[in-house]
Image 1 (cartoon, one colour):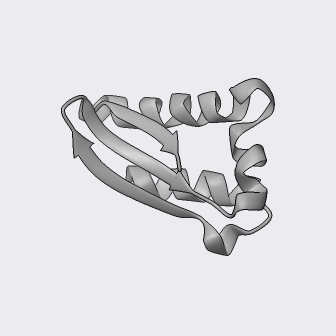
Image 2: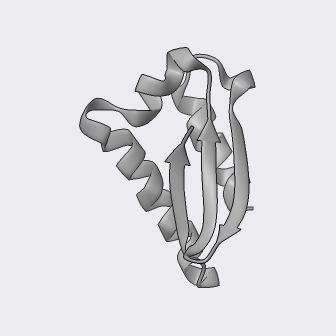
Length: 76
């Protein structure tokens, strides 16, 4: 559910929404969500000074909090 919500948010940011992919894996520190986008959209997802990426991490963390899951959002 968390990956679907993150995918929905990222698709609203990018120019190539059909190429957005979220992969999930489990690490010792918690669930890891990786955002994969078209190379032209990387700057949009990262944002100026990393602000957009930080906001995505905040949203994912807020959605994961009730389930007591730790989430990290990374890019390729």
